[in-house]
Length: 249
Image (cartoon, rainbow, N blue to C red):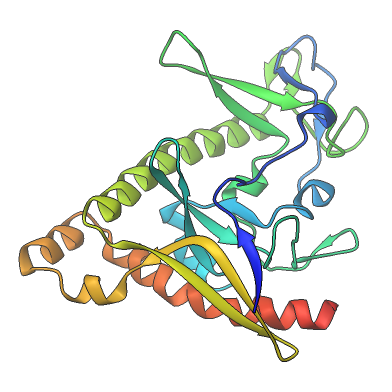
């Protein structure tokens, strides 16, 4: 078998040298506009993208999900799998995104939130080098120095993503504490050739079914059952990735 490799060290990485991330300012960016959409040039090399529990049900209809482990911190992160090896996104063809849905982490761009190092506050930043940013096309961010309704909606979405991420972190930690995450190797068949995907963690369905009544009730009370079952359902989408890879090959 041909091992595809360990994915735990690279989640939604980017070449910072190609970005020009700056704090958003009503004077400096007075004439800036943003086009809706996905930065396909960036996404085409992303094989894993973080997802939040609130979107697991939608993600499961399109992509397989897994958890990757930060070995230094010992923490886990839920991700959608867009490819079967690093640097591969099977949902990008040419300059188009072919899936009918994109996770929140990929639609926030070119805006983002950065936490203040000394305060419990976030500031909004913009990647000035993004192809979605210009002074001619798209949605204005400011009018007469004031935020437009469009920018207000984008900011609300960014804040929601932070809040959803915190809930997802708690969800993931609970699964890890209950030892419900298990290292797994997925084997896919691509035109008769077996390939292994390493470095991922899945929810251990056997252990889930063996939980005590008390622990299972705790899952239900916390609202964790729905994302767990969505996650388990999503693993069937690995076969879809294999079909897409065979087709593109």
